[in-house]
Every structure is written in C-alpha cells, then in structure tokens.
Image 1: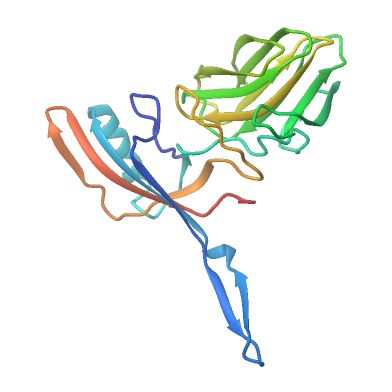
Image 2 (image 1 turned 30 degrees about the vertical axis):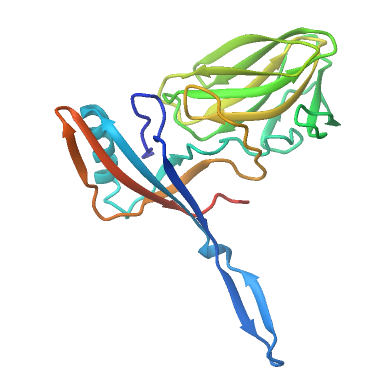
Length: 267
C-alpha cells in the first residue's frame, strides 16, 4: 500500500494549506420548460494544496519516492486528511463501525459538553474489562492522537487504547464528575495496515463519552464531528504531472503538492 508520508514533525502537512470540496449539479429542462436539478455524486472531488517547507533530505526522498512509485497522477495512494477526524460516526457508538465487547451496554441521548445531547453512557456489565473500539485501515508506524471527552457519576479509571494485531499502546486516564477531554498520543509501531482506537472500561463501571477523534499528528486539534465517513482517503492521487522540489538551503527543500480524491463512501 502506497501511503503519503508523515514528516519529521510527525504530521502529513504544514500550515497554511487549502482544502476544497467540489460538487456538480446537473440541470435538465422538462417538456414544460421547467428545470430539474439533481446532484452528480460521481463528479464530486476533494482537493488539497500543500505547501511543504524546510524538508530535510529524508523527507524529500520519501516524497519523491511516492511520486515516482505512483507515476504522478496514475496510481492511487492512501492519504490521511490533516484537517479532519479519521474516525467515522464520531458521536454514534451504535453504528456498525464501532466494535463493542459482548457485555457493553449503551445509552444514547446523554447531555454532552457542547450543550447538546450527543453523548453516550457506556456501561460495562461484565466481570472483566470491556472495550469499545473502531478499526481504521491506516499504517501502524504513523503517530496518532486519540482524544475523547469523558465523565462519570462515580470517578474512576478509563484506559485509552491503540492496538494492532501484534501490539497495544495503553494509557490510563481518570473520568471525574465534570467533562474533561483526554488524549493518547502514540505510534503502535510495526508494519500492520490496520489500527484500532478506543477505550477500555473496568468491570462494573460506567462512563459517559463524547466526541471520539483520531488525527495523524502528535496532538489533538479542534474537534470535528463525522458521520458515515472520516478523513481516510485510500484512493487519493497526485493532481500534478511533475513534482518540483526547490533547494532552499543546504539540506533544506520545499515543494508544492496537490492531491485529489473522490469523497469516501457515504460522504
């Protein structure tokens, strides 16, 4: 799988960057001369313009290698949108993309820290710890930040998890009686192409949660609510025929990169 690289700062972009979503509406006239309008989903595109500055030799080489391997526009690659939440259904834990252990109980419609009712009460009715996780088709050697708001009537520990088939990164946070946003920044490591993100709740415990988010960077940014799709684009392509790299100083380079993709399914 070809993947757009993370750079030395452990992110896939620099700011400022530009993201544009393009759609098309088709207009037809009926026999009475009145217009019929309908969307053309096959024409929808998402485009990014990245200005990359002060790249070192290794960063520049990884960018060139990807461009050459994809033969410019010809072949697709995986791109993790640096402006978006990688998870889907970030506020709907009842969705099929969330894997719940057998004795997890969900209560929706709970008051959330943003003033709405989009939080969920997760209750563990088992005698052992239970998990709520979502798996993404992303490289295990990238650095990610998982964040979520938590609150509990009875304060207690909650484990944040990143896991692959061969490794699990775990950190314990405390859910108090007031909402707090907690995060886990880590790289699971390895060569796997699937990583699972979520929380583990102790036996018999309950915790309210809101706003799961995963970003391919060291720290958490502003929360972005998602529905059927998140910021994982497995069929992105370069939107340029040449990759122009400029030498700014000894060992320092810059490049302007344009990327384009169809929206993910459900977007």
